[in-house]
Image: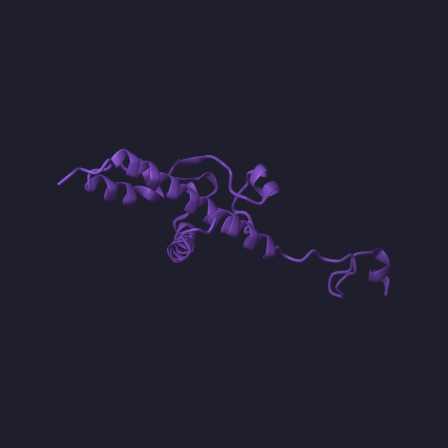
Length: 143
């Protein structure tokens, strides 16, 4: 049996992992204020650095057990890499949902779709008219 070229496989796997991570971060971290990088918030898409994360230790170990280096899935976007475990669990659920979308629509540009979806979820801007319980001008407080 021929040995597959793991370097090509790992390269493809790393690209897929990064795409999935950036899509999930664009959908979750930017809108929810977890990302503190100005460039990501301004462009509304995850573009920050990827860095090794302790959250990925299980995935790295699994890849190493099958003979790979583990580098393909070791990194996460900066905004999620050092988050608390409960935040990462939510992030993993978002990633799992995006994996299912990817399987059903392999030709879909996942990052663009998530950016478009996130832009639709923006909170509506408050108008300058005030809520009676929170007056905005001194004239309203005298009433």
